[in-house]
Image 1: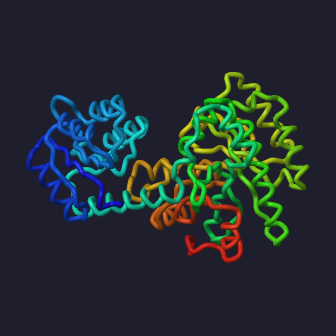
Image 2: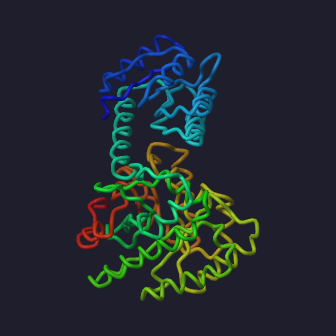
Image 3: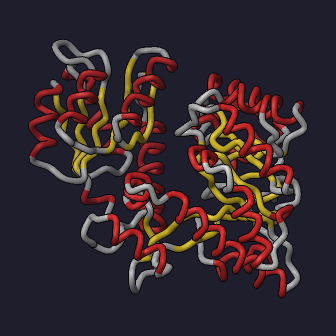
Length: 399
């Protein structure tokens, strides 16, 4: 699959474009052409599929940020890597903009672009292919109507899969996060990228919450029969706390499944928020009064994360993958990660890092005193039976 990618080495300086092209070829990319203007690249992208653009930022006529914006406006979705003489913060800002525009960013490198950079880029792209095949296959083709998704929830076609959370010191699985997956018939993998947007659009987040909780409780009950106590973490969108009866309904659901509220943590997703902050505090507080754990998810990414972390009764902070992945080689990201871990520990919270993908990430988190990790270094989300080997034997990700 990697060999079918078209690679565009985009730089307005012809010698720099040639250097990019030959360096990428030396790293194993096969179909590489050099381009000297964003307009040339746009023309190629309009006619191509499965492309990687390795691009400069300082270009006359249309700079790299304008180029990214134009790709977004035209619905073009190549993989992107930025290469520039600009400072790393400027490169990181360009990468953040590209991600916000829906592009998959494979890297951001300060010139000179080296063979090591190119090899790293190829490794990240290869990992992206593996991840997609493991987790991001599209759900079955269906009419895009609310009834389809309601039925999928009721019929359990949308299911809870489980990503292990591992103690960084012992390597033992201490819990799992329940993640929504729509399995593809006849395949061992599942996709979630598209249907979750529809779940939100059609106002089905509460039925999804209860589907995930019930699937998690069923798996938890089976693990308990085998002698393992496994804590569940379930995503809870903040706007659902506008329902004043939600904490009682969640408690009833857990107790009717012979579960314990103390073994369930709700992760508050802050990509949305509540206008009525009093209701937010009431809902969070009542969940804690019933014994549920409460985690600040994607810390540093959502709305007013710092204020909420210090005013709501959280038991855990989960650090956003954007601060974790690659922080070992990025001084700015490392500083943010270190401050986040230190704050969580000072507040007496369990600190979990998301998006741990390499042993370098792990080594840094261990140095900083993080408690738990999640990520592809350990495992993607799997079915309930896929968790049992981790429970039985631990994981080799944290030797």
